[in-house]
Image (tube, rainbow, N blue to C red; front, side, top):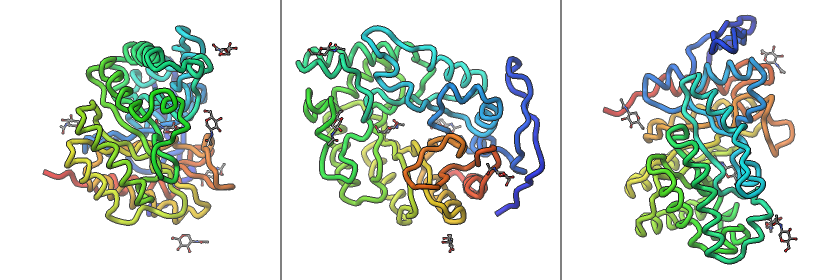
Length: 340
Ligand SMILES: *[C@@H]1O[C@H](CO)[C@@H](O)[C@H](O)[C@H]1NC(C)=O
Ligand SMILES: *[C@@H]1O[C@H](CO)[C@@H](O)[C@H](O)[C@H]1NC(C)=O
Ligand SMILES: *[C@@H]1O[C@H](CO)[C@@H](O)[C@H](O)[C@H]1NC(C)=O
Ligand SMILES: *[C@@H]1O[C@H](CO)[C@@H](O)[C@H](O)[C@H]1NC(C)=O
Ligand SMILES: *[C@@H]1O[C@H](CO)[C@@H](O)[C@H](O)[C@H]1NC(C)=O
Ligand SMILES: CC(=O)N[C@H]1CO[C@H](CO)[C@@H](O)[C@@H]1O
């Protein structure tokens, strides 16, 4: 591990409108510079447009990452709180920032575990419900066609600890298990080009849930459902996935013709050495397994979400200094050699 050059600041030249901003140097190349050499997408999720008003946040985001995705702003009730009225401004802010800094944008929240507006909850007739989905997906995906290159279409379809589909989902209640298939078909009709993922938690640590997701996704593939792949959320506490598991997951979906990505990695432990070890090991195995799209659930502990009291799950601290987890990630990325 490299030592942190604590006192050094570097000056970044952002888009003309943003001027110059000083932020702590890592003493290394950036993650995105290393990623670009190897054609890897390295992103930060959980980007609320309001965070961009902090110049240091914006500078570190643009300097380190080549992809971003919103926090909650694309979830249904936040984006379309009343039928036909859209809060485009929040997402436009993110898209414009990404364009100014040569970053791609990942969309998420078309269907999520929260945030279904009352007017949707009120629709109980399947045909009308599917029409509402179609109108919402079409409006959102067509507006950002060519700007959002990939979407998490369905998130957390399975029960958290496994044991079948989450039957408490609004979508499940009205449409039954086929809602997943409808969602992908509607999304594909709305955007012919974007990659479409199913986003799921804990499959790298729960063997039964891993099998359930595989069974679900292989049925989708067998039915000709337009799905590009599986996004592993990868929220980790103290225990890293057993070595080899990420590789097995990637290989199993590759055999179905699908991609695997990491969509919201973070590591919730108070032990920063253990945290760095986990970041390093997961990124190393993921890259070696052929994963080319890795996003974290944010990058600075200033805006971290955690369920472990006192844990600081991200790669930079509250004042944007790199932590051991940054160096471990950087090292894994630097050491990675693309397969011929
Ligand atoms: C880079 O990756 C993208 C998407 O994974 C792929 O379409 C493209 O062919 C790759 N380019 C190179 C030069 O390998
Ligand atoms: C939902 O239905 C309830 C009961 O019919 C009604 O009072 C309410 O206004 C409806 N909400 C919306 C947002 O349509
Ligand atoms: C079921 O969903 C509703 C609203 O979507 C939520 O308020 C409730 O807590 C959920 N119940 C369970 C058992 O998850
Ligand atoms: C922190 O994690 C490291 C690496 O696993 C371990 O060697 C060390 O004992 C841990 N420290 C504490 C205080 O648990
Ligand atoms: C962030 O790390 C730097 C360098 O180690 C340290 O000086 C600073 O106090 C840290 N910030 C916080 C809020 O802990
Ligand atoms: C990237 C993405 O879609 N993440 C979502 C995964 O699912 C959970 C639960 O619905 C959401 O909170 C995340 O935003």
